[in-house]
Length: 132
Image (tube, rainbow, N blue to C red; front, side, top):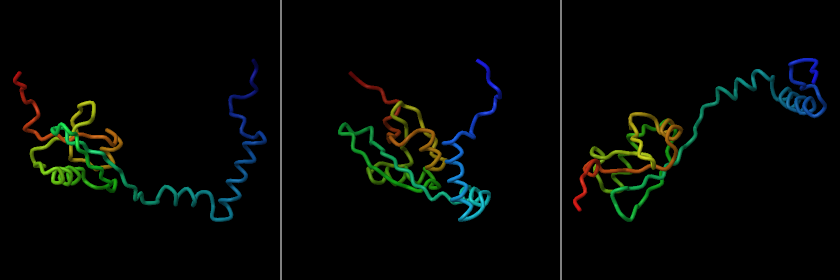
């Protein structure tokens, strides 16, 4: 096979037509650079949603909370622990696979790193021996 250039062939009909549509649309509203600048500078006011299960209860009750991305995760843990009527000071949050979560980060970071399904474990249950 012989290729005349390593550059992608973006000047073909369908690609150049799409590029022209985007450029024409943007140029009528503002210049392309200012459009990208506005897009990148827009504040993210997103929310994240967590489903937190109380792992110490055999019925596995859960609470679903939706919080801003910038919210401290310690506040989320305290709220859910209060809802389950357990002490937030003696509780730990883990993932479904058992990985512990450091609560001193934002809710957005926790969501991105660990996902939305978490477990709340009262620390008096962590490391407890089972008597058979």
